[in-house]
Length: 254
Image (cartoon, rainbow, N blue to C red; front, top):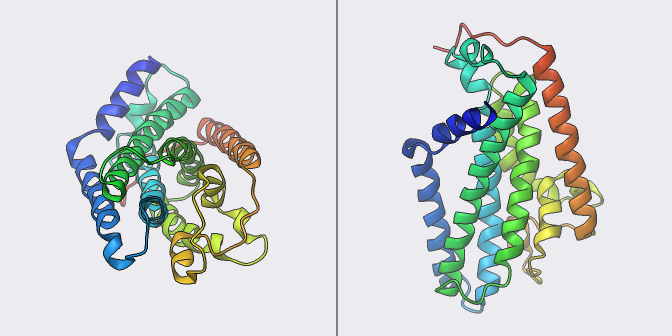
């Protein structure tokens, strides 16, 4: 039954109508990386890749997670199909976590696709990018971390997509640049510690755009540990919450 639920969720998420906007945004990453040398003639391929991936690819990863993860339950409630979903002979926690796993896989695929296209734009090919492998790892973990957090938020609030989108583009873009220890409250700061992108040097404007203006002292090992704990705690809370509370179709969803 779990594989059937996973397969159905994947079919929903992989519909062309849902994927085409993300494919278009990924090609925007390619174009920006390719023409970045026009904006900064002194930039090198690894610098162009690191800049565009931090400005766009990781932001799109968070936004994609917000959209796909909040749809796991919220979409069923708003489309009034939640009753049919919950009548399946499977535990609620299993249903929730399997659909979460499907969303994580799709979001990771979109992030990796964006990173590959950014590599093509910055390096004029797939060779020479030593950061791609670590970025794929960071994006996989990021998809799990963002997804776990957004899943719990979607169970707590109506219109949770607005909250999650603001977190993805507002909180995650600004908090890593804050002075002091504030950067530790951002998932992106931990993903930066895993990805280990090169510094932006003395370009403060570019550092603000890429979220590297703050003093990030997070080590790679502590980033793995912190995000791992976040995922486990958020998923445990989500599974418990979804099991204990009732969800009914929304009457104001039309």
